View 1 (cartoon, rainbow, N blue to C red):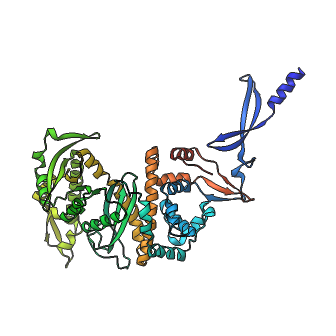
View 2 (tube, rainbow, N blue to C red):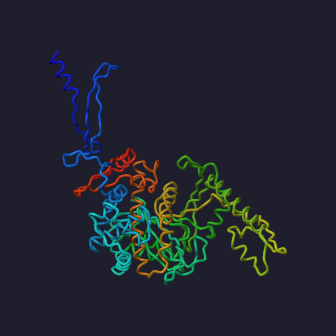
View 3 (cartoon, rainbow, N blue to C red):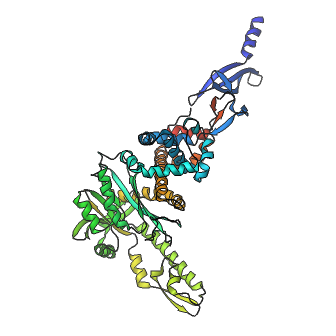
Length: 517
């Protein structure tokens, strides 16, 4: 009986055991008790704390310590390492300057702040402890001027692109960025946003395989799209990229650009504008040209395709004529809603003396499809039936020219992958526009370089999320917000511990293959 009681006493004693979760050791206290219901010994575990130098430490009880932001930086630092951004910059500027550039770039991915607030934000992060940076407004302005002065952009892009010796597919496009600022690059030109402000033009090339931007250039606002391609091809050739496939929108279609690409023996996929006479004829005759034998499946959608030829100056280019009925239906509905909305808006106006009809029509996007006249203080608006019919007849139909051995599926897939560069412009446009006010050209160029770096980080992170399937649950922004729950706590003896990792954060870390120190 005594021996039994002694054994029972030993069983009931609590014990400390270790448990490894995601590579991190935790201490748990296990105690035992007899359950009269189940009529057997049961175990109860109580969390003691994280293993810090062999001692259990409960992070949540460390009230005297200071908690630094940490989790949101973990995926960004991994991307910076993957792309080799820090190593490339270290060859051309000091470590402190590299830290400053990356601090601003990461801020523009996480939560863009004015330059005057960057230092306070960065000092609250755990990254600032190991990566010291000078982030006062004055230092950052000087740094951006230096970026332009030493031409860091070109030195960085030459190595960062990683295109030399490859045959990449480059998605190239150009956009305008409007601002009320005052600087020589701000000029009036064709605005893609229908604004009347001066602007700069920003062109960009994205490597479709890596899904990261590899080149950009800034032009005065009056430079037209079609004239930028020649210079870009020359610049990339100087970087060692002489064989690649260009994927271009219709704004770059011209006999000069086509001649340039053909003479350089470069492959390309380029949409043909409806203003091209041969394309216009094809679009108007598409209904009679395309039959059931031209019907194919593109993914899960049906599409009509026919091989054709288009004129580009004196050259004949191979091309594909497409008719996407689903796209036609969407375009038609959107156009008719917009047209009716504009007509009702015009008819609702009360016109004051001295107001011209031209200024009124400039407010609506479908003006060329409306026949309008003044009647007293009102506008009489009627539809231009023939113009509307011609416009609707071309909806869902488009022509894509190409050079190289491409089937229709490859041509269409490559062209639709331009969505990557269009999204990159969306991320940059509003941010850069605000940075153009009251700054020198050098400062603006330096700032746009940092914007480019932040875009490369964001797009690579998006690729990682797409590959892991996280995109189904999170956007980049929502994922970074979730990761903000992980913090680094400084103890009274200056040691650091990581706060407990939530289930959602743990899943993000596992899916992206990240580690937390």
